[in-house]
Image (cartoon, rainbow, N blue to C red; front, side):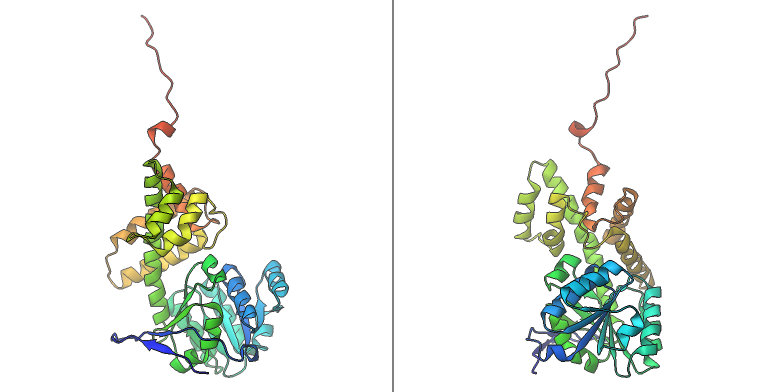
Length: 333
């Protein structure tokens, strides 16, 4: 199979960027893919790989998640070890560092030498390095490949992979990435994927709140939020967050989460720690922190981050919407 690639003409001192163009996966069914984590992202990606012709296995502690995979045509496994023993490639989409450590130990025990494991989770780079070392002792390669895109985008294959690690291993996975993503950007040494992911999420944090801010502004200005999304998205002020979360804010459908506020809090902390480590001033990002914290306080933990629209709507209530104070008549003395 011939894969076309475009390499950026300018190289940085620590990484180069290579974007893989779309090609049709060759001999997809010959590669067995295992998924560790079948939540919002994992279920969407595994579903698309099944449609692309791959044999997909999966493990998740949730009985319901495993049942969904079986219904979609995949093979659910009862443990991480059982999955590792049957596949050629493992894609991990995990919620926290301990889950990654547990997965690394389980895969190291049962996985065959030469197995490739792709970690798409948003986690601390040092934690990923720890997992990498656990697997390397058994001849298993871990790649750091976080994703850019929401759960809704994952369903549509509207994801970008920020891959990092051994170039040969990443190249080997090209057909797999093309099965669930629109693009793969190779960023060089292990950990660079997470660095780019934190940069992307910093923008998401700001653009999400700015989307809520402008739609609320327009609504109180007499401009329909639906009209605002359509018109602004087509102009210089448009953004992917306006496209993706604008409609959710218009319909107040943040109960249909593609990124839960509670999960997003973990990402916010990682960005904050990286900014402190690099001594980078980020006043716009800092301004969004209390908005997301308020979303937690208002009971939106399990809702989509589009719920920041509700937060802003509570921060300043128009006079006409405020409850009128009862008039008090002066008593005659």
